[in-house]
Image 1 (tube, helix red, strand yellow):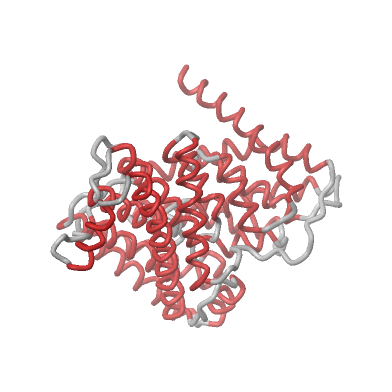
Image 2: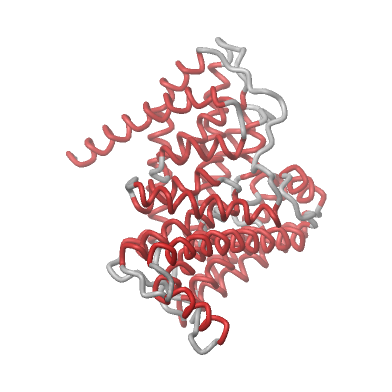
Length: 432
């Protein structure tokens, strides 16, 4: 249990806070949760970096090139051993959680429940397992861990102060967005995630609370992780009016690809083992991934390496095709084996790679556009459709890359084309 009244300092804090006017008390809770969400993101970031260092000799830091070079510098045997250990840790850990722990709930389930509750030990353990396995090389996303722990803390705080259902739900969503903002250094996108995905609305109070917690969390995490953006774009991304035509034309492709991707990954999760087989499946899956990493080290991790290479245009169409096929395969395999993790960065990377592939043919006729511009537009569109957060996806890519805001125009065009396709897709499937 988090927060016990018999702990003197917490009892004093509780007494002091409950004696305050309701508005002031809630404002202080928002401030507190913003700091806590930032610390959660920062600590999980440290765990991730240290795990990467142990696995591949990666010096803790946000530079993807050091991570890729560290993997390339390791022997083939070390890569395989690291991924075997990854499968062993994940398999045993998730088996024990499934066998002896309380059932964990998804973030959306927790936020939308009539009586929001998340099991404490199981949620934290699941988050740590995700971060550790991703640090060793799992192809799934790290974003779920800080969001889950952030929501858990907000849930306990809401119960501790006996807040009503709506206030607790709001704090859980906002704190999940804050943890997300902290680990990725994306204060605006973190708040938008809470509003667009979890709360699914934009009341003034929700906006104020979500942005307050996300901004405080992001700035708190910067003390430890630094004010560093996820992707480094050194040279300017030149693009012309024809990029708008490409965005309009390829939106349907990104939409269909993202919808198919989510369908196969959802099916993989649904068929994942829960008993002792989860250990065997994870060992097999990650051993295969380790062998593949001997020949294609870019497969390591959640897709950040692939996305960075795409955003900087450091790949050919053939290489992008091979890497995309490999990424989708290992992402599907990991979920089918029962591994836990998000699909944010995997979706982002898949979109970037698909954009590079389509840009190869387009550039024969319009050669003046930077490949990175295609990749960023494609990444945001694929991500927005796959995770059902079109607004958040566009802002997230702009924050992560810090590119010229002019690129938002083709991003919006491509997303609009993709959303229209998604609507037609849904209507067609319903009729069937």
